[in-house]
Length: 349
Ligand code: ADP
Image (cartoon, rainbow, N blue to C red; front, top):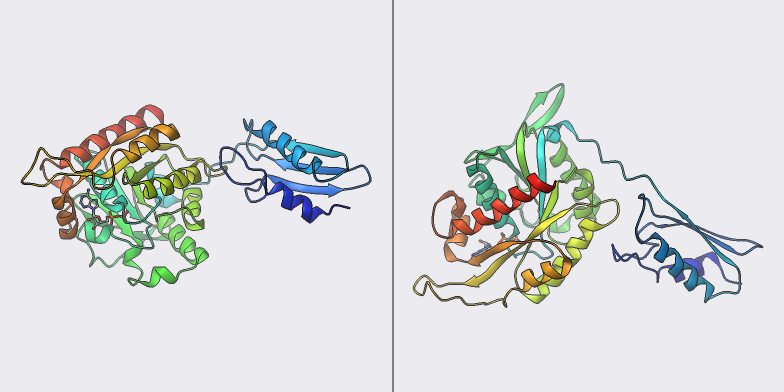
């Protein structure tokens, strides 16, 4: 006779089309009971009116039917829409929180975050940046505040961290608290707890936009950050290269996972092409052409623009003066992406 464990194993072959996760690991399978009457499988879709509930239930029944002679009954439950987590005082007066994410490290996510923050500030918004990239915190360097020693202040009886400030932008970074290299040995829960503290215990005050420079990838740490904040949306950064693009698709799926459900504002293609200073009309597509734009179309998300690979962008980052602070030609690429983000947030979020 078939066992409960064998049925669970079979159900691991049934995936939810939206999240791509199997129903066991995705937490949809709630219970399996084997009795005299047959098998009763309870699925809990956790949110109301899951459009895939019926097809998932049918496929689960078919899979178990094929493996045993017992009568198989599926009970499908709907949950309430997940309650949004309570906002902690630290971010209580932040109007929009945007996660800047990438599938891979090194695609320019931090550089895009810093320059978009500058552009938002130029438009007159109050802006903060939270550097949650435990694997390579670079906002302190990008904004020239590496030497900042964070301190705490009491607010309504609780201790809060006062963020650094550079060019009118408030910055707090995991980099202020760890030695370079330590993050690599951090286990998931340790990193997650540290980030939760940073999120909730920074005194951001009144902000129009808080940008979160997320760690690359799609692990527990990233999910915890997304779940612990009432995110307005996610901005995805990719290079045009195929391998980076594949990782990004996984990253976007994470934001669409049940329980996380953060709108993807769009995709920015960084290092889209290279133009040497001495040949200003030439474009060299070093990492391939338009890969991120095509991926955005395929995934049905907006393409927010391309940023070329330009030496001054890297140089200014190293100097602690994001290129968007100036008015050089390259600044207009970030300005254009920023304009689209503001438009989307104001219209849709
Ligand atoms: P990530 O946050 O994705 O790890 P970074 O923003 O740290 O990536 O960028 C990785 C490296 O690429 C840095 O040295 C940065 O200065 C450089 N870089 C990023 N974007 C550009 C660009 N558009 N042009 C030139 N260099 C860039």
